Amino acid sequence: MRAVWMLLAAAGLASRVAVAEPLPPPPGLTVSADGQELLDTVSGQAWSRCVEGMRWDGRACQGEAALFTLAEALAMARARSETSGKGWRVPRVPELKLLGERLARAAQGPALAPAAPAGWYWTSTVRIDSEAVNPYAYRNVQRGATETHADRLVPQVGWAVDPRTGDARPDMPRHERLPLRLVRSLK
Image (cartoon, rainbow, N blue to C red):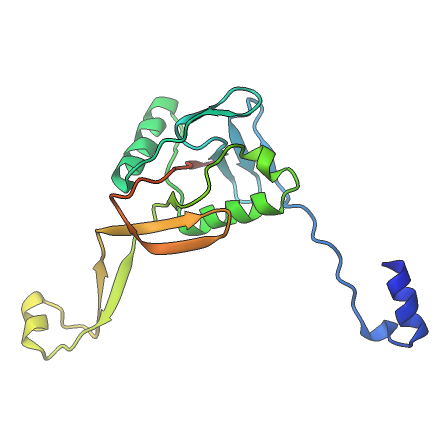
């Protein structure tokens, strides 16, 4: 880096060029004392270190990842909350994407969330479609839709995220079986 600066200075370009510094590792992502959770002190969240179906043995996540429909994933979060006394839930799209980004940027990322299967994971984000409404059309008046736009819940599909790529899709069929990583608030 110093050699580049010296060459630019010699050419008279040093004052016009900004050299990019490497990005620091993501702050605040640590492992809990028992190793069961990833603690994100920046967002104030605790993530399950292993995906559901796997258990932390002190060195790695052991077992096989369980696959859930969206209804089963939501029920699993409720059951885990009741048994542990902590408010576990299925994460929302931005939360799971952020965790994936932070794990990818961390040098020890694979060790923080070991043996996590690749692919799509369930989120609790709901899909709502908005459509223009003609308030003078008899069909719309009959349905009670007399505003200019109507929001419609799409119950057959849900949102899923691939944490490794950051991709999110709003059209995952709810009966599809996907892995699950739960999150809770640190407060």
